[in-house]
Image (cartoon, rainbow, N blue to C red; front, side, top):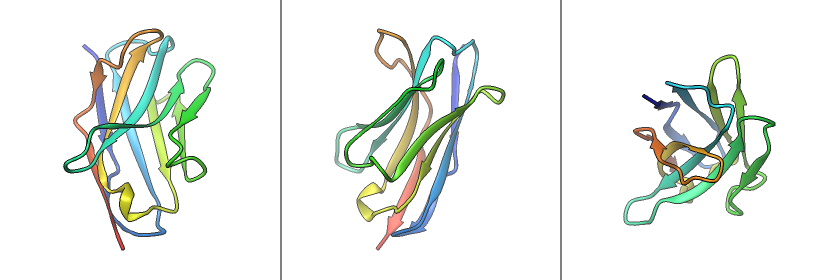
Length: 118
């Protein structure tokens, strides 16, 4: 049973930073892509960033490129999202997700709320 547990959300002022964590368990993730998505009230869920567990290649949404960094710690089976220069429009519920290569993201965490005040 795959489990993804996010933490690290909170309230921060514009220009501030937060680091989200996603603790993964239930299987070996070496063949997986891990990702962060976010959903703001009244909006569709949107892709934020992804990392290939094996090799560590990354990809980002244009809206966060240069401000957010996704990384993973193999020893801790944890994926991180370092968020710098936060903007009010980054306010959303942030979700961790996992997918085998070539498959859709079908494992999801419960989400962690990030609120950026202006």
